[in-house]
Image 1: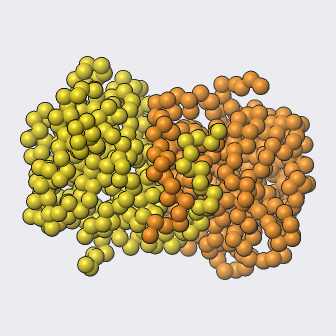
Image 2 (image 1 turned 180 degrees about the vertical axis):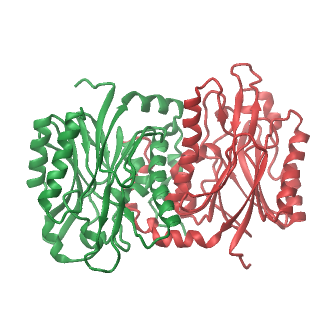
Image 3 (image 1 turned 90 degrees about the horizontal axis):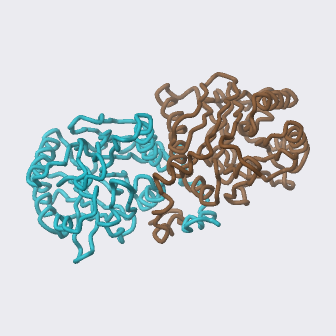
Length: 298
Length: 298
């Protein structure tokens, strides 16, 4: 298959907090159609975009939200990918077996097939983000997914803090890193703390772009979602979805409020140029990296 | 030994390109004295600060510049550390044996002893930075150096592009990462390219701070140094030395021109707070990281 010199990406920053799942789905579908109409050949959605971020509290009944993969959502997004002849990255709450659930991102190929999926490997657990209750850590490893638009280093949210995940995807041939995500502020934190958190989140991902010489695509939700347990004031999802090139340079970035599709033409040649100029992969001291598999070196 | 709640750091951004080694040494010594007078308990100097960055060309005669460790420079800086009762991080061209040289950073304890040294592990080689000709890659690994002011994750220049190096130092108990460095622009590059390079360099190191929840100290030289071989227009060292906290937040940053000592009080407690809030080390998937020791996963 011939590759064009650039890839037009559509990144969907949207709210996902409507209590009615049908309305969230409609919103995602409309955005995908809009992005395709603007020429996107790859469309990326935020983490768990079919509903409110339910991990703000621990409630076994919420496991009813999970679905099989393949299942109704992959059928629906697969049909849409086929109709529009695009690649779609969606993010689902996967039911694998009774009591066994994953936070799983899926890639639908433009022929409607499921190109692959990635089960979130690093699972957070901190106030407001009780994911360890719901999600079993992924067991598929860090394997990029080959598609007609390139090899996708698909990771999810908390993974974005881990240079190991980014590196393993790059070493396995990823052309891009993609992070569907759902992250925001606790409004009880000070303005200064919130600013540091947002900037840290952007910076560490831009760092992955630099260290690995490839573009990074990070797609977050927006809007306030209440904590139904009443323990906290909920989460103000901070948006700021962005796309950076292989030197970490911004190609586009949203703010913390706007519902917007970021349309970005990614230059496929630029990674090659940057990696020739900065051949970091050449000089890795792999014989000295063994202790990276230790919990702590004590 | 009791630790104060904060550590006062003096970071010396200076030119090092004087052809007379005595003048470069004088400049470093004066800066150390000035930093100590301002209360610094730890002083950091740029990479190979005793002379021009000689790796712009490959010339065997330049190996005459190398010295033993311990040797005259560690004696001198050790005596200064003792006199001022501070810890000094210096950077030397190490002669280990005939034909065997390293790019080595040394730590002098406030009692005048050599607390430890780090031999640069990742060695660059690209136009203007022909380090593979001079420096044998380090064989001491990524081992932090315990001192009276904390455990120093001392790395050098090209190492700064490698998340593996930062992580290994953090896992081995480093309180801070320190990068003496010598990096600058090729003035033949466009303004845009130069801006991307500088920003990438800052960003990837801030990313190490975020990923590991510790402060990062990066100390660069300034000034233009000609390429004596005449192959290029030389290097404009870009300064921009900086100190960031454990969320990658700037504590201070120099510009690309000024000769300046950055005096920064580093809050020792902040790493503990940040790592509790963002317990990234808790969730590393160490059983899935084995392939980090592969050159490429193909």
